[in-house]
Length: 103
Image (cartoon, rainbow, N blue to C red; front, side, top):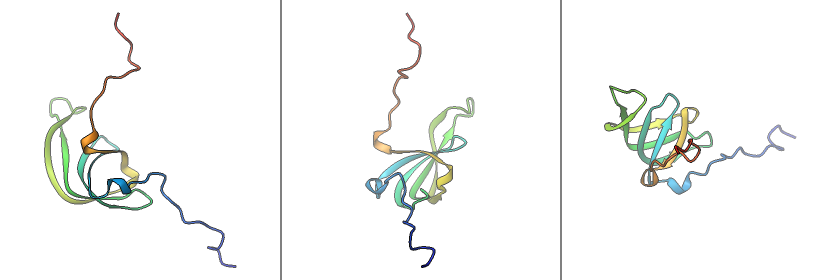
């Protein structure tokens, strides 16, 4: 009996197949954000993004990501650095429901 007989193939917890060939927005550790068309991914969530753009930070307030972008082209994003993946068209900011209400 070989070592591989009792082992199953590792599968990713997240299924990104519904986002293939669609634009997504990705947030990375360290605060960087980018968006592009998802061309491929693997079980470690390494992603290939085409027509990718990085969103630049506001020079006056580095904690705020602005609307200004710079083109990156075709990139491979390392899965261990990715914190959030969302569809680009479904991204909107909402009020924090847990924030203290002013009376």
